Image (cartoon, rainbow, N blue to C red; front, side):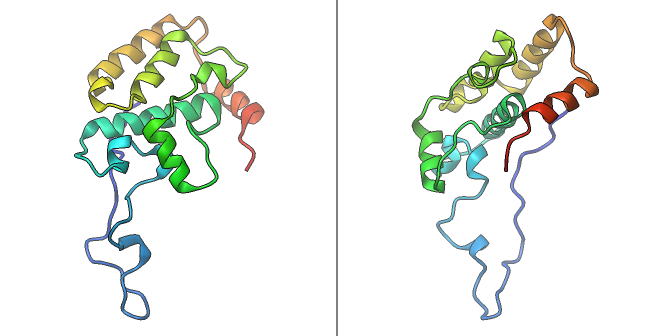
Length: 155
């Protein structure tokens, strides 16, 4: 599996509404991205590089392991604050199925608040290979489908 990009897609030309105003999606002051997967540096408007993608990948991995978002909140701003300040609960503590400790730690490393503390893409690939090699029972498509049937999030 290869992750190619978690980048943002934005129109080159601003979308115009019926009144000629810009659409809300292009208004100044709005933070781009999906708040549930947004790295702290994105929310703060700081310089962003590939390490923000590692954070987003950590959020995706967390969801795939638990069927839940890293942080949940009633309002978007509360969610953003949690990404800025709260410590994530390890995935292994949110599911009944076992999560290998190395995988638990790797997901949490991807979710480090400081970009410099996150693994690089190469380090992440090496660590995932080690975790996969040490699994007693590798998962295939049948196991994954069964897990999702049993743990599908309720909408």
